[in-house]
Length: 249
Image (cartoon, rainbow, N blue to C red; front, side):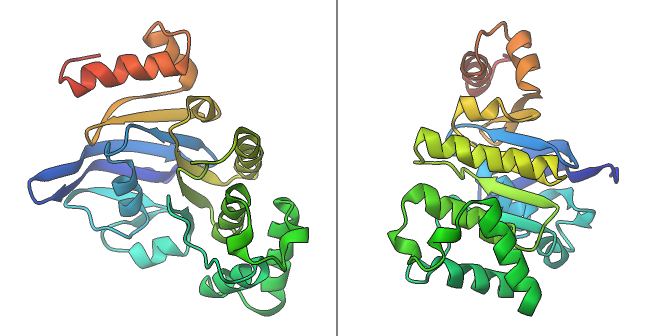
């Protein structure tokens, strides 16, 4: 696999008994790219992310993240990535400051470096006035912002964000994407799943998953052009419906 890419897979497959959750998925993501993973619930997006993050062992195929084999070097991968799951995974009874310090220590950051990284993330995400607040009392959009801060404390070269703006209001979603795009400009690779077509327009490329397979992959502009669609939503529908029915789009 090419060292020019930060995420790669070849025939990556995950079975649960007779059910194929991810079916022979092959693609590559360049360093600093914002790569969107789109698809309906159950399309295989989260399963694929969990394999890349070393949280789920593939059934077959191969993959690399940050140059490490997902089958053999999952521990080394975890030191090079940040991961935001669909479900809120911080501690709601701790303050914002305590959650930051806790997750920083989990990543092996200590002392002055931990305080410096925490200050950096707090300033970047505009959260300085929230440090003493109990996390569970924050609005959902601010909780997600804190989750992003915790995932990015150790400056990982790759961030996996699984529907980070689900149930977030439109203004907070736009703010969140401003942060994501700023991280990308700094060189961080962003691998993100979303159900919002307006968000997918921010991605350099998107992959559309149907029943565990990649039905299409390209830039938003090229997908709209290829499927003669005025909007990305229209292109998505034209790709997903025939693929789900087992015919060529």
